[in-house]
Length: 211
Image (cartoon, rainbow, N blue to C red; front, side, top):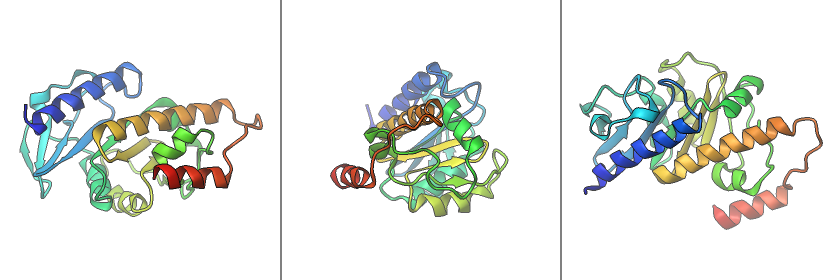
């Protein structure tokens, strides 16, 4: 099996699991993976729970559609992350409930809407989680905003929309998106209950140790 074929299968498997856990509903959410000769991305109006490997969209290195179904209308958010972060191998955009709730509560312009409650949130997401202004779904005007934020952050929250998360590999991006959702759930559960957060020194140690 070629690497592209393996990644097509992996996108479908991760999509099925994310959909099964309620991290996307209907045709919401999209996934992309960097290839040596371009990018694979889930098609527009596709359900993450019912993806077909053969129909995953393929774009060339110039982001032109060269195979599979028509790509997601939000392809530009993936392009913004992959261009801004050369080490990123994949991007996951979800409408997971708790992360989206935080995206509805947090003020655009903020960089830490979720406190560092657990080490795995820091390890997967890092120190910064910028909250970007609201843009309608599919609006290409959000690309520059995402690209600017992505230079200093592995993930962002789109106000009133949801999270966009990158990772070195598809597995890493999915795991980071799942960890972000869990951290958002904990933040909402513990709000105003005086929860103990990791100290600045503990966060520094995690980032120094795990990158």
